[in-house]
Image (cartoon, rainbow, N blue to C red; front, side, top):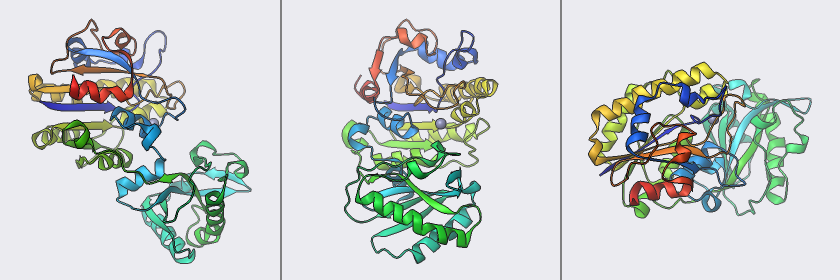
Length: 379
Ligand SMILES: [Zn+2]
C-alpha cells in the first residue's frame, strides 16, 4: 500500500450567500474521492494555539504541538539545516518614530539581507550568539547558551503601524538579551541598508527533536512543498524533500511539476505529502473569484492528474487543508477543517461531495487532528 496526503493550504472557508468557495468551485475529483471514501471534520489547531500553518501541519502529521512546538524560529532552523540550543526568528524591520512601519524590511533582497547579517555577526561580539541569513527579511538568531525560554515576543507582521514599545520582548534574562541585541542592531543595520533599520526578534524557543515518523508509523516519507516551513517540518520528521522547479506559491504554480513529483516520490517512498500554497495566498488577498478558480485548478491539475495515474486500489489518499483562510477575514482561523480518506479498508460513508458542510455528516465525525495519521496508517 502507498499513501498520499494532499494539503491545499487555506482551502476551507465560510459561506458567502449560502455557499463556500469549495462548493462554488468545480471539484469532480475531490467529490469522487469523498463519495468513494469516508469523511469527517478535523480539529488541526489545538486550543490555545494560533492557527499558523506550522501548528496545523504538525498536528496533521501526528506531532503533538503541546509537547513539540517551541516556535517558528526552530522549525525554520530545521529547514535551513541550522543547529543550536535556542533559535529566534530575526526579521529586518523598519521603525520610524517608535512605530513599526515595515515588518519585511521593505522586501529587502536576499543579497542585501546577507550583508546585514554578516555585519551583525562582525560587530555584535557575544561568543554564544550567531545570526544566520535566510531569505530576504526572514533570518535567524541562534543562542548557544541555556536560558529559560518562557518569554513573550510578538510577530512584527501583527503590529505594523503600531508603537513598538509595548510589544518588545518581556519576562526575564533572555528578554533582556534580545532587547539589547535589538538596540545594538540599530547602528549596524543602518550602516548597511536603508531598507531596514533594526532587527526584530520573535518566535523563538529551544530546538526540539520531533519523533521520527518512520519509527512511529513504519513508513518512509517524502515531502513536496512550496514553502520552507513545510520543508522544515519534513526534515524534522526524517522525510526526504522533493525539489520542483517553477514554483510560484500562487495559483499559477507549476502543478504539473508538483503532481509529477508526487508520482516520482511514490516510486521510492511509502508516504508522499504534497502541500501547496496558492489557495491560501488568494484567500489572504480576499479574492473570492481567484479562490474558486484556484480550487477548481487544484482539483483538475493535482487531484485529477494523480487519480488518472495511480493504482487507486493500492493507494490510500487523504486530503484536507491545514486550516481555513476565509476570504472574508483574509486570515487564518482555528476552526476545524473537512477531510476525506479513500483507499485500503476504509469503507464508504454517505457523503457524496467534498465540502465543509457535507463532511460533517461523514463517518468520522469531528475528530482531533492528531488522530489523522492513525486513520491513514492503522485503519
Ligand atoms: Zn496563510
